[in-house]
Length: 481
Image (cartoon, rainbow, N blue to C red):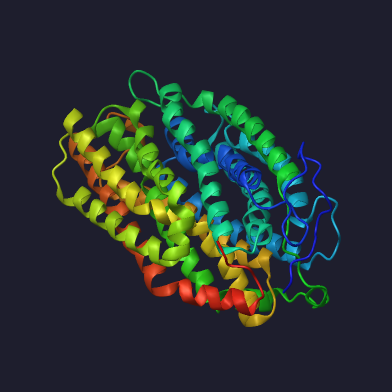
């Protein structure tokens, strides 16, 4: 398929840009920054809801842990409805949008995201339990739908910014950079703000945090919308094909690379989101230093930046799949050591735990750089095998399973925590044996997560370097350096 012009000109460049053979500005730093800004905007909202939503409603609003675990499972049924429906809505739309199909959805969804995130953190602990549960459910459902309207087209858009394999790897890596630049300061700084001197949550501050982060995210979305170009256009003959929602879903489950690209983030979220509350309690009660808990997330993400300068060379020489699977072996070893090495409840223990988490982050670094590009390649695979792209539904189902893990992970984590003696009413004052259980639970969840990620990359995802090059040749796409 020959690339054709989608957008005319580029009014955002002060100087005349260097153009590619199809008349577009060549993919470069502006594209990377703009695409990174999109995930920066997504994560301004997601990191808050994903990290502190459970603690807000259990420790501050007073919903007991098992009830809240049940609520999270119910909310994921809503995910099952809204993700594929919104993806199908995108794919079935034949309308020509001024901003482009994907960016139009992102534009309107970004405003809804700010409002719904604030609704999720309304501080009304004095309300009766029915009102609290209603606020939790309604707020989250609105936030989740808004996030889907933004995130599904954003993730799908990677496949149309460029068809070049190395460009996609760079764009996917910069997307992860955008996510990390949002997550790291929030996760590192917020614990200092929202925990008091006794390591207990001050939930009333989270509403204002949600408002400020939402406004920052909104600005990031606008920057992305004005500085991205959709260079890959669907052929006219494919546009005339009547969209079949159920066939698109069937194609996803027959798309082995899409499944292989979905298993690792699902496993990652089951581990990190499932263990997030246990991590908070571990730092509250075991290490008794909740305000530095954000360092853990920081050290998981930082190693990714290590790979950035060498990413294009690694992808061109070894391939995305090959590099990611080797890194995950390092991650598995680090998580295994986290389980079996004694880690005392003192400063030395904190240092040991942080060191092992840093090694774990180094192992995951390569995958974190190329994971999004692997999904973009899976969309191409669907076109290669089935003759249709179905970007919206394909990415929506990918997103659905990710968000299912984001809901099931905390639910599973909370159930396991309660089984191991956790009592949310005690806050930071958990008995020592319970605090010790949290330490082992975190390590075990990280280990299981790393093993499942490796299985998805190694044994399910089948687009190795040679197959990817064959596919892109057949599709008439450039795969050069």
